[in-house]
Image 1: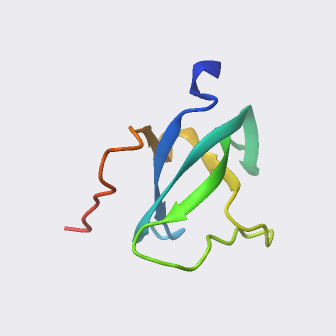
Image 2 (image 1 turned 135 degrees about the vertical axis):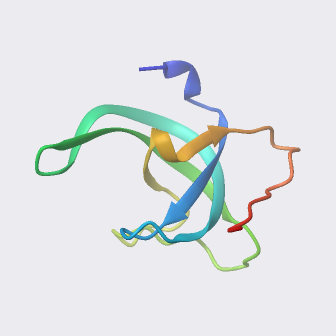
Length: 92
């Protein structure tokens, strides 16, 4: 587990359980958890991301547990970015 990710700015691709891309959010890694069971027999490394900004929206990000602008995300769905880097993403 790369604890050097804590404090880094990350871009996260959001998608449905069917794999349809929904959009992009950006936030800061606050914590990490290794090998968390996300489904029976399925484990992923997760990052707790805070200060989330939703690209192209004034509405706050709302996690599935009802918390605004923070939540757990799989490391495989994120990339480290610079705060100055534009938030670009295309579904094409």
